[in-house]
Structures are given as structure tokens and as C-alpha cells.
Length: 458
Image 1 (cartoon, rainbow, N blue to C red):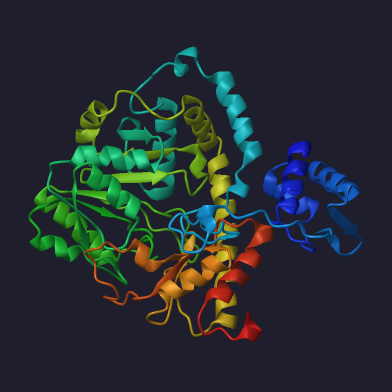
Image 2: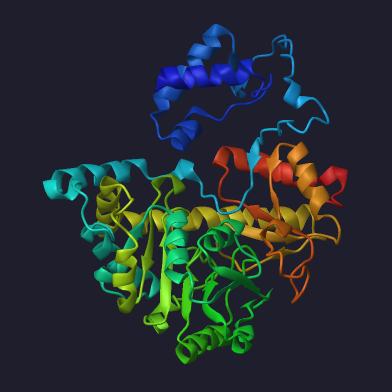
């Protein structure tokens, strides 16, 4: 680990990613981010100081040594200006939405759960097993979701999937041929594309400050199902209004349609008690969808569905075997049963709340003319911009090495821009992904890209 860290830092300096004079995070801070011992980082720093790559001075921390800059390598043909194969600049800062702070992954607790899961797992657990997932995890999820999100389900109704992509694939195949699928007019294009590729006719519902306008379903007899993010609409960041929650369930009961509840950011509400799931109000008409991607890490590739009892057999027929790692399922089951998951979510809720508060206070001080939209929840906020400035802000961010998305990217082609109080131009600011030591620099890069911010405030 020490050698790997030393080599990585050396290459970062040699390649120019760490410029001369750059101050490195303290050994304690970097050790926490990487999940290694502090001595490992301190020794790597000491090696590079001895080699002349870094300098360490009392009171000023460890910095990249001032040295002659290497001659720039010749640019490949693809990087020539105007060439269609031109390579994009690699972002230095990441404020993309939907990305958690993976540096905070609970390594020690996960390792302890791994040891317990391996020690107690029967040999049969490592066979093909149930196509719907390991019974240990399905039981643990049923208990946790009932307690934390008000979901009503037996373990037999829980389906474990290999990430949210497989959830969309399964739903697409389940619903193909059952009529039009209504989705929110703003949402993740990957989900729309996956459902469309499976044969679903995907049509948008208008979205405003109260969430999806589900009253539009009343005149649509062709609609067989609707996909919603009621707890925290993605990406607009609003909650589905109470009357609309009741209305969409009435629609499902009357027409026999299905409500697909993507419980996006349902665990991360900061200003009040979290609103329970729609599924708890009508388990026979709602398919509940969840994932560990935001609460733990997307690399685990673990997600789940809670389906009405009458659909369990149909879902089983669509799967030959579970695609998720048996070991990861057993570990997550232990992590849930022993309270590790609850403790981690509580810690991350506090961490992300502080991140959001820091973002909003910075904008209030330096860009008070720009409005932050959305409820106090989740891993992102929507920043409304003056009309006609969204694309220029996204381009300015890219030039400054900041990964940032405009609201237009999330809009369904059939949904008009700027209706129902939704800003015509905005950026979606994900504040969760940067590690603690890089968050201030990411916010500074955001300020540099925003319109109308005086130079003295940037």
C-alpha cells in the first residue's frame, strides 16, 4: 500500500496533475479518505520528500516541490483543435449528481461483516441458489425496509438485483406489451433508454414544484404503469405532494395499473422526519425499488425490488439465476442485521447535510442572485440560472476542470422547458462525491463558472 501510494503521488507530480506549490492534504486526512493507516501516508510523504518530489516545512504542511516543469509531450492528432476525435479535458473536480462519497465507505465494518458471513455461510450458499436472491438478504431487507421506509412485504416478495440497471431491465421485460409507461418529464435518461430498449412505450408526465402531475394519467387509458421518485424527485429535488400521492394510488386501483416507486434518496432527508414509502399504502399496486448505490457504494452492484405477491412468479420466470455476488449478498445481510447499515446511514446523513449547508451558505454569500431549488434532502441541489446561461455555465465549468450537469440533460424530449415553475435554465449540483479535502476547491470552481458573480467574491 505504501509503495502504491508513493508511485501514484510521484506520477501525479511528474504528469502535472499536482502542480508545483500544491499543498497536499494532511497525512491524517488522506489516511481517512483512503482507509489506510496514518503511518502509511506519512511514510509515503517522507519517501517523496527524500526524493525531492515534495517539501515539508513546519507550519505549512507538505507541498509539491518547485522544480523545472517538464517539456510538454506532443499532443496526439486527436487532441488538435477542431479534430472530431479531440479528447475532452479530464475533470479535476466532480459535482455530478447521484454520486456518493465513496471515500467514506465503511471498510472496517464491512470487513467484520465479511468475516462473519464467511464463517457462518453453509456450503450450499455458494451454489446457484434462488433466482430471486439469497434468503438471508431478502429477509434482512424486508425487516429493514419495514422499519426505515414503511414498506410492507414478506421476504418472498423481495428480489435482489445486480445494480439498478438490472432493476430497469427486469421491469422493462415485465411490462413489455402492457401499454404505455408514464415517467416523470425530468429524470435519468439511462432509465428511460433501458425501458425503451426493453420494448416499453415511454411517455412523459409534466413535473412542477409538487412533483409529477399524476392527474394527467386520468385521461390516458393506454397507460399501464407509471415510474415515480416520490420521496425526492430526481433531479428537481421536490417531494410528491400528498394529494398526488393519494391520486396516483386511486388511479392504480381504478385502472389496474402499476406504480413503480423509485425511492430515490428516501433515506436522506435533513429538515424533517422522512416521508414513508408509497408502497406501504398499497402493497398490491406498487413495486418498490431501492439500491445500495447511494447509501454505500455503486461498486457493490446491489439493488432490490419489492413486488406484489401476484407478480413474484412472473419475475422468477424472467430470471434463470441471481446475477448478484453471493458473498456480497451475505455480507450486506449481516451488515443490516448487526446494525452497521443503520449506523453508516446516520453518519452519512450528517455528512451530506453539512455538505449541503456549506453549499447553500457559500451561494448565499457569493451568489445571492441565484436560487437553490429543492427540499433539504438527498445528494444534490438544483441551482436556477438566468435564462439562456445554462450551456455557457456548463462549458465554463468544463474549462475549469469541473464536472457539472445542466438541467436540460435530464429533460424528456417530449417535456417542454420552463413550465410549472421549473427553471428553464439550471445546473444540478451534486455535493456528495468530492472527498472532504477537495470539497472547498470544487465549490470554488463552481463559483468561477457561475454568471454574475463579482470577481472579488470568486
